[in-house]
Each structure stands twice: as structure tokens, then as C-alpha cells.
Amino acid sequence: MKEQVVCKTTDIEPGEMMKSDFGKQNVLVCRTLDGEFYAFRNECTHQGAPLDKGMICGATTEESKPGDYHYCRKGEIIRCPWHGREFDIKNEGRMLANPNKKLPGFKLRIEDDDVIVYK
Amino acid sequence: MSKDQIRLVDTDIHERVQYEDILEYLDEPFKHYIKNCHWVQEKHMPYTQPSVAGVDRADTVVPDGRLPGTDLAFMQEQLLDDLDHEYGVLTSALDPSPSSMHGWYEMATALASAYNDWQINNWLEKDDRLYGSVHINAHDRDGAIKEIERVGSHPKMVQVLLPIDDIMWGDPFYHPIFEACEKHNLMIGMHHNEPPVYYGKWPRYFIEWHTLISTAHMKIVTNMIFNGVFDKFPNLGLMMIEGGYTWIPHLMWKMDQQYRDLRHEVPWLKRKPSQIFKDQIRVTTQPAEELTKHEFESLVEQMGSDEILCFSTDYPHWDYDSPTRALPNMDPDLKRKIFADNAKAFYPKLP
Ligand code: FES
Image 1 (cartoon, rainbow over the protein chains, first blue to last red):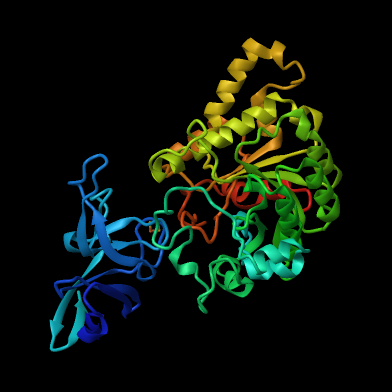
Image 2 (image 1 turned 180 degrees about the horizontal axis):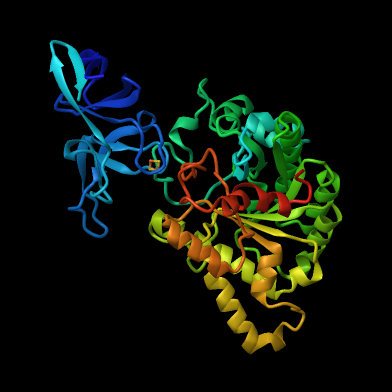
């Protein structure tokens, strides 16, 4: 499988995600609030939960100080449906608590209103 | 199935009742308070369970929208069939939770009986793989004994579930409960019920509380051992549920060292505490700390027994452990013990 249309651009609103297939692989297609698309393997690196059952949200950030929350990055963070680990869509799917770990990603391009994942 | 394949015995599964489902098992006036006065149990935790879907895995909501753990068919599909469970032990009654009521004990006692009947009818008698826990009102010792007498002989009730909360169960006052358990071949299961791990108070953050739940387990194990429960009731076993497992060697070493100095105060102990632990206490693995294979095997060696750990998923809760992913790879014999044989050897009523 070299490339495949995984969905239409109209299938996903900004700030949402959906699962699709790329050959035999389960893909998570995410759309951030700026309208950009991203694709990752739809399986949490921790214990393998299906990420499409989680949520896209924002996160409390590093700028937070003890007792003072700073929350932003809305629509840019995937939270796993099980243990809630957070993955940064715009930073290669890296885990917030441990950026050395990241969700395996797929290359993706848009042609007309097709979202295409390719190798 | 190949002979190397291990069928899981899952020692912590949470079924869930809805208030309206329990009504038919309740007498008046308790039914009235729920039905007409809309009583729901007050909970005390100041935090949200900070996951995607509250206390549950977000993908365990029943397809028709009902709450996780409420539907046997969906639990079969998502858990028991999918992972090919050999047996699962039900451990719930979290909301309402008779054992964690701090007042209105008449209601708590009535709820415990209603819950047990509901559990037997809707779960234990509907799936051969599922075994159950007798729920009691922790604040009514004699009522608890009555309830154990009432449902404890059910062939699929394997343990009495006692809360890890603010009660020190080793106190001789509670020993008649253990006597009733022994009589019915029931073990004790202890599951945390929002225990006050910080000096009787809530810490500021959920992560602090959740990190230290194991300290509540350590306290109750220490209490049960030094109060002589296991010497007095040699057939009794205690399953410590949902506190992780890395605390075990520390507590064994600490208790043994203390015992060598202070034996005179607890002369009824006939074995050293670590031996009592090995003989009569078992520990479920979830929420599993993330250890390498080397760390895990070394930890089991430090316990001095490979018969203590019993795998548990905690389905459908958010901190669920996957049987294929939560623990590191290990030697097949050890794996068979942790995933099946230890629990089977522990519960006399498991085939
Ligand atoms: S499986 Fe995703 S956080 Fe654990």
C-alpha cells in the first residue's frame, strides 16, 4: 500500500479526529483548529488503547507555576481514552510527560477534498 | 488452544448497578428514599477523576449510551470474550457503595443485601466465568455477619469485600466476620474506598492521593498481621486489590525487622510477618508500576515467593491494565502463576 484516501476533508471538523484504514493499519486522522490535518497510528504507545475513543483537547502547559494553571493548545492535544496520556499533534505526536515517546505518524497530503496518507 | 496458552483469571472487574436497577431488591422505606426522594450517595472526593471519561475508560460506554459496566453482554464482548477470560472476580458496589457510607447505616445494610441479590441474579448466574464478592455494611458488624450467612454459601461467591477506608479490620471486634468467612470458605478481598491516605484528609491534588493509595494497603496489611488475624484464622486469605505491587518487599522487610525487636507485644504471631504474608496474603497487580523485565523479576525474587501476585484489569476503569501490555515479558511458568494459577490456588471456590 503506497497511498490511500483515508477520508474527505469535510469528514472532520477542526478540533476533531476520526479513525480510518491505511491498508491493514488503523490510522487516526486529526484536524487541528487551524484546519491542518495529521495522521498517526491509532494505537496508544502505552498499553495500546484505540486513540479515536479519546479526545482532542488543550492542555495545561509548562508555563504553569505551582498553584497557577496555564491552559492552551486547544485542539492540538490527543488524550488517550484509557490512562489519559497526552500527545502533541503539532509536535510529531510526542507525549507531553515524556517527549522521547511519540505516536508513530504517517505522511499526509490533501488533494482537492481528499485526505491522502502515503508512505 | 496450545498448551502454553494461559487463560486469564482476572481478579478485579467492576460491574456497575444503576440506582433504578436495585429498587426491586430493596425493601421499604429504602426503596422510597431512592425512588421518591431521589437519594444518591454523597461522595467526598474533591477532584474529578482526571481522565477522558471520569472514572471509566472512555471506550467502555455501552453502545446504547448506558454507563460502563452496566451491561453483561457488552462486558462479555469487550472483555471476557475478547481477552478469553477463564474466570473473573467481580468487585464492585462503588455507587452506591454500602461500605463507604459514613452514616445512615440502616440504608447501608439494606443496600448491601440488595446489591448482593442483584449481583447474583444479573451476573453470577448469567455467566459461568464470573465469580462474586459479598458486600456488607462495614459499620454494622453483626449485620455483616448476617449477610455473610445469607449469601456466603452461594457457590459463586468467593470472597467478602471489605473497604480500605478508615476501619482497622484487624481489631478483635471484627474477628467474628472472619470466623463467618472461614465457615463459608470465603476469602477476604480488600479494595480501596477512597481511603484518607493523608492524615485523614484529602491532599490538594488527585495525583498525590492516587500515588499513595498503596500506603493504605500497607497500613491494613500491617494491622491485620500484627493483630493476629492470620494466626487465629489459618484458613483465611486476604486479597489486596488495586494498590499496585511494588510495595510488597519493603513492607515484608520492615515488618520482619520490627518483629525481631518487638515480638513481645504481639506474642500470638507464630510465624514471621513475611511468612504470614507469603502464606495468606495475595496482591492484585493493577495499577501496575512500569518495570523492566529485569526489575520485575528481581522484585518477585525480593518477595521470596512467586505465588503472591495475581493479575487484575480493573475493567472498565480508566486505569485499566491490559493483560498483554501492563507487565513486562516474563518466564512462562511465572506468567502462568500470575495470570491464572495464583488466583485459582487462593480462592477455594474457584474450580
Ligand atoms: S493506553 Fe494510552 S495512556 Fe495508557
